[in-house]
Length: 156
Image 1 (tube, rainbow, N blue to C red):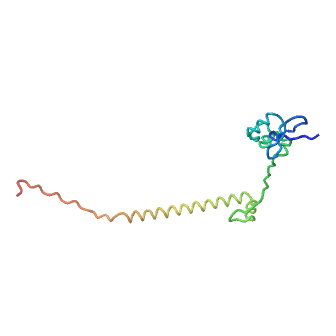
Image 2: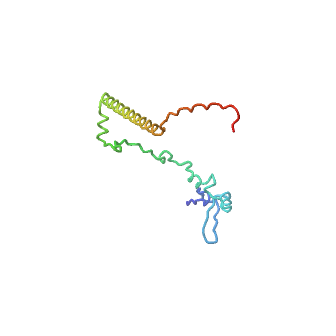
Image 3: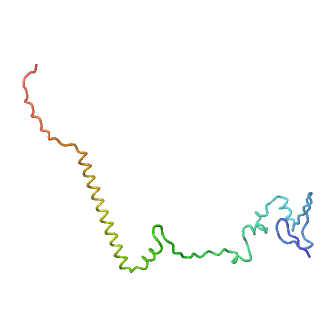
């Protein structure tokens, strides 16, 4: 007993069911029922018709092994890699240091950074003061002119 497959829907056709259509070029089409035959002749795309096998395959509907077909997510594996400018040995050495030593080093680094920033600030202030002094013209003390004596009478 041979089961044909519907050309439009993709379902199996039992013996004694369906229709066979043979095109003028000799290609044979098997249709399950009139609904499939009419849909094919109306040039409907079986991938867009919800009840066809092609639509279900395209949109991944009702697969038997859904759990198996899901992709497994990769588990991240931790690797110790050197960071730019430092080697792996230096990083491991810092990790294995005692917390008190690391704290003391950190405080020392902070202290030196603050001192350096203070020196830079002072030097900037000195440069600014010098620039202000250069910009100011030398002040010559001007003495006010004595007021003119008022003249009375007509002037010729």
